[in-house]
Length: 235
Image 1 (cartoon, rainbow, N blue to C red):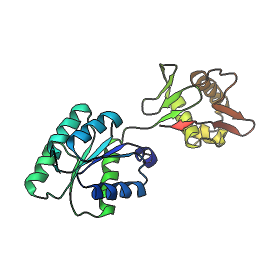
Image 2: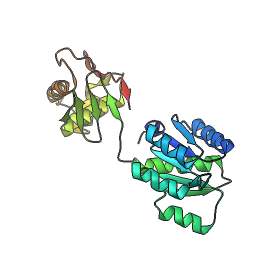
Image 3: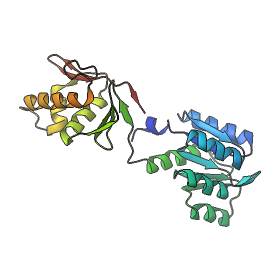
């Protein structure tokens, strides 16, 4: 799992203390997280969640207009994403109630910044372990988790070999990936003699990912060396 992909996921922080919100925001930004949103009440949190569609929420239990347990139920009605409670209320009953409602973790204040970051990293890796980013090319997107190309609204399936070749090209995006490397990615540790098969697979891949396969903009040939995949973005 690519941690950079996980660290781009929106996170909602809910606490009535601005100082605590600032502290946790700073901890997350120092840890590489880029999309952090805050709220100080249940009402603000619900409105913010509707706008930003968070992928993780960190909730205090005690809030001015309700509690974090009620808020968790409201957030779960909108989407099922992981919840971490960060609260001064450390009684066993509160811990058990939060975890019993389906929270992924419960941390008692005061906390160690490194521990909070570790717990959030672990929750995201666990929750999104089967998810991979979409890779945007000039004319399409590639969804490796579903082995398909999305082009002009159409979902086009990739064969196993096409998937393996595209994945190897994507790992070396923007750089030359040699013919030997691609043959090994698709046919294993004895890749010799597959050059013609590779060319045939490259041709079929271009038919799926390019607007004009005869004039490729994403999967280009580097004569005598191999191929290069031009990636525009990873979502």
